[in-house]
Amino acid sequence: MATLSDPPQKSFHISQLIYDTRYRSTTIQVIAFILIMAGIWWLASNVVTNLATLGKDFDFSFLGNRAGYDINQMLIEYSNDSTHARAALVGILNTLLVAFLGCVTATIIGVTAGVLRLSKNWIVGRLMTVYVEGFRNIPLLLWIIVIFAVMTEATPQPRDFRGEDAEASMILWDSVAITNRGIFMPSPEWGANSMLLVAIFLASIVGIFVYRSMARKKQEQTGVQSPVFLVGLALFFIPTLIAYFILGRPVTLNYPELGGFNFSGGLQLRNSLIALWIALSLYTGAFIAEIVRAGILAVNKGQTEAASALGLRPNRTMNLVVLPQALRVIIPPLISQYLNLTKNSSLAIAVGYMDVRATLGGITINQTGRELEGMLLLGLFYLVTSLVISGGMNLYNNSVKLQER
Image (tube, rainbow, N blue to C red; front, side, top):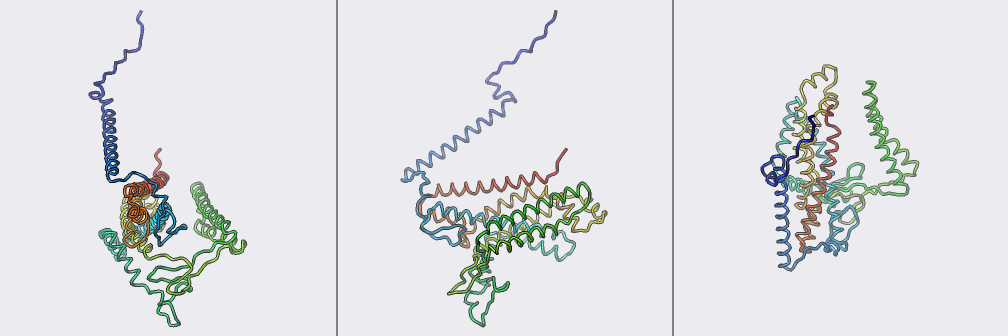
């Protein structure tokens, strides 16, 4: 009588790590990893040895020492008696501020220019072409310096606002002054119950998104289109305005006033911040415009023709049919542009904007002589910031990409 038994298993030989294709790739990866780690260890040991030869050690305790220098723009409290860590934090916040403002503005400019470049209007199309080619082919540093020079030389001095026959005047009901030292505008003063007002405003924003989602689901299920724009506009203003008067006007405005040699009070946007913001937005917006144009052209022309056949107007065809499909092509390269804008903000030192490159990567290193530690911290900051931006945009990309069955 015949019996069945398990087939004999082949024994493992060390030579299979090289000659067997099942193990060869793993062997190569392990060897490459060991070589890379050995190279890093060799470089690190050499750095430590050379630093010791120069009488230096690898230490981050300098972050707790007194900074001793001033910063011309601060989002948090800071003085020259603060520590180098505090100065680095001020620079980090300044970098994040200009990066956020630049990404928002560059997206608006880029999407608008990209759509208009496909316009059938010859003048509009050519103007957008001039803008895109002009900013893409000239270094960003030159644009930053040019815009800073225009902001400084083409605007009046504070003394020009003085007197009955003043050469310059404030705009927007005498509330905003544009000078060669920056733009002075009203700043909010937060009183009692102001945080409650802010909470109501944030709740209104959340309510707008909830209503938009409900309106979209209703349209998909029933085909009935709800008035999203008007309801969203009402949700944005009405609850906050009602709460503002019920709570006794908890937020007031502090207007800038000319006193001495300069304006005082209010909020000052320095020319260095404005020049860097505008230059980053226009420069990156030119690249985003090309990305948007490529994304729109990637959508099959039949989609536009089908929408037109259904009676949709061109603007609604663009908003409802073309752009949603183009997003899956636009977003991946758009992430790279956001990363480039954030890293390009390090050119701020050219116009005296005190970002993290100027504080931690500049003055702090010069004062303490800790160039290696400072540059490592600076690189770590840009790495973490880039990973956060990339991760957030990839989550958005996954939410809008086509879902395959």
